Length: 208
Image 1 (cartoon, rainbow, N blue to C red):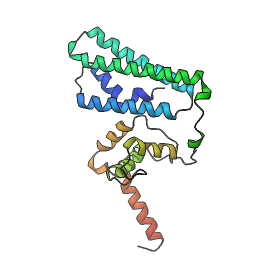
Image 2: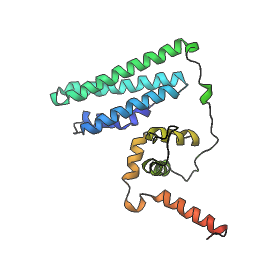
Image 3: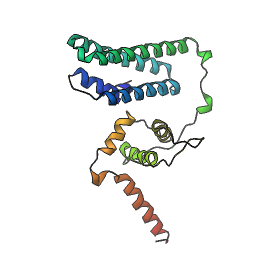
Image 4: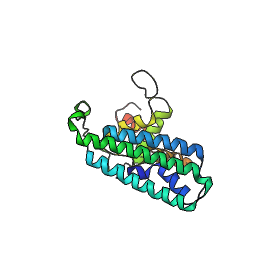
């Protein structure tokens, strides 16, 4: 239920409510990412009860932030308050769509065409930041394309890994930033381990 409270947008809004200055461009990007994640969640999640609770839980937390900013009565925070109002409108509209879907299940049949269930899981000693390191390598090298030949969106590529390996990033953009923030000696630590593993196997097969 807390998936949207762990997004970059909610983190930035919380910082603003606590009196910290935030970058407006970063906020705008985070807003677009939030809306995209909300759309994908509603599109892919088949559990209507989970959808309802998650949306309402998120709306309640957004309302709390809005009330905290209203108490401050600071005109410099007007843009943030307007953004919070937009978010609440989006969440309210989204909830009404989900509610309609709950009341009219025949109008929204389960997506059986996308019922792929993977039997692949991450090993216990592999951290999700390792997988994000791999995703970043593929994404920023433009090594993966969609069916029309264009580079895939970062969120789409991440979703392939999540679905294929049965795990979920709390916030894909925060995890991506975690990769970039690592020390230079650890920046490509997992990729280096993969190189070593391939070399060892090649040597075991007598090619090196």
